[in-house]
Length: 386
Length: 160
Image 1 (tube, chains in turn purple, orange):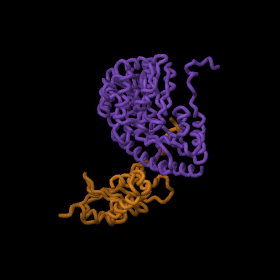
Image 2 (cartoon, rainbow over the protein chains, first blue to last red):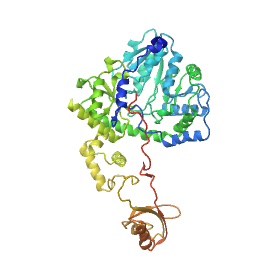
Image 3 (tube, one colour):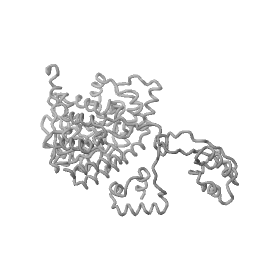
Image 4 (cartoon, rainbow over the protein chains, first blue to last red):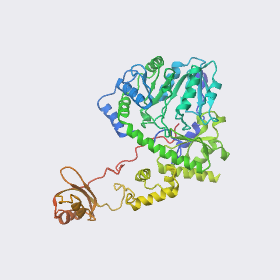
């Protein structure tokens, strides 16, 4: 039967932890620190705007690029928050989540055989989507550089075939992000080597210790960066499937070409809700962000007290914890913890090659404080029982 | 100090240990600050928010009462407000702008109790010009908690 399926799909490995996911989904009364989405529901005023859009009969297609008003306020928002100016007419594209935006960006720039550098650990889609585009993704291991790409690491992995670097910061699964200075030193290499960067900054609003710097705001980077962001994390709108891409006109227009044939447009009611989110969502974002930061501060202290190692997370809502000391593999640790203490975490092997990630688990603090505390107590008991 | 108040206002079950971890302050300092806040009356107390729609225990009868009063020379509304809020039946007393002056929430075992309180204690007070009593029928939301529906959360228990 395998030959019925296209080679490039067969080339993609099925997710190695499907089995573990099924185990979690089949268990009742667990506390899950394995959920990669906000525990907040979409703020009511945004939901209400979506309902109103439906009531008013906004049920049609929009232009391929997305509602002009949404593009305009997104352009203003990015300028206000991150200091980059994009022309809403031809440098902004509304997509069905960042997932679609990433797929479009890769397909728009990658020729067969072009190398795509994917720093890992990372979110699951970057590598396989590059394979589907017939590019040659190459993992950069960041496990010995504090989960950050350094200029040295980047330089030593660039070949004559390298065309694209994928960045994601704040990062899923590590919570690590970059300072302006660090980005500047990366930008130098990127410019020298003439790379295109696809910069997934979906967690930008969830940055806790310093302001978020957009790569495209650095001198000379705007013309070679495809900036991706969306509504899922900052506005707790995962199910609305709404994202956007901003970048130089040629790339955005190429992305739009694919988008118009494959997706047509993002759902109009989501776009209408998105307008409300950008215009009136600031205080809700701030409140959620404060809550995540407090949880981050708490969890960091608890993990230190347990003697676990991790790189201090400065954004998103994850901690990538080294459980090597226990002598267990990530998967064994996660299964045992689930069975014995009914706490779910995600084994690191979901986020990159086994060699680098089999000693890590991802903890997501997307649960309320009391639940988080209970879960951490259980993890502490579990560690003592080993 | 401000952050401790914010944290406790949101979740009074946080222990000094929890707070010290969140704020990276030592426990002794946190404990001392909380004590100070309690002594100075910034923190008045801690209690659970009960969903009476669900609890099977006894439910008191409550009324929201609008009270028009005549303020007293040199003392404004404070004098008459104090005369009113000292009754144990009065659980909440606000001075408000608009067509009336004081907004009360009054509790009693039954409608009769509340009616009697209004007729015999509140309305006859010198300075009270009129009252309008609204008996509370159902609570939908209280202190930020929605009381009538379940949690609005439909996430899967694991996702990347």
